Length: 247
Image 1 (cartoon, rainbow, N blue to C red):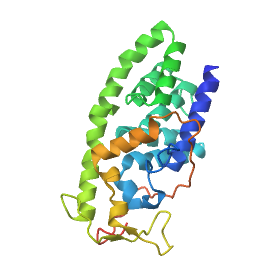
Image 2 (tube, rainbow, N blue to C red):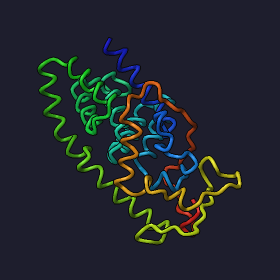
Image 3 (cartoon, helix red, strand yellow):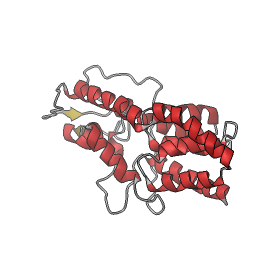
């Protein structure tokens, strides 16, 4: 029963993760517009970038690479990536089964009290014996110190602020009449452009609003609100545009 539950959970998280834009039906505005997912955007959002890379590797069954990529996303506070790491350790996918470590990772994933991650955390805990529970708590302290929000959020916030300033040329993020010409992402080659207001929307770049967006996307149960979309290939080292505006 526990294995089936975790498999179902993994499928749900992967489905949502593939879209990078899961939304509750009642809040269409609570999403990441796929049009903004250019190389430049993903380079400035390493949580999303490495989660996407991890999913791509996972789907190719390149599990060792997927685990490393999920860890990179987890380093920047990505809760779905942390949950996938937990699931991989629990089921021994590309790594030796480690039930205690699986709980430690799911405990971090559930830190923001997202419904499905909480449910899975408690399910894992109830399946551990007393020794495993003690081991999980002991080992989880170091993981939480490195990957928990107190450490991970400031890392991402620093990048968001830096990259917003680079793109807008302003400490306050003023975009004026800025037009973004996407050379990568869904709009590449279509002749369509993005306004500065669309690309540099506060919910993507202002840390407090970005975390609120993540909360809205993930706080409700996943069942019944999965939206799957296509991912664009992202080079290992995205090149910065020459003028700092074309993304």
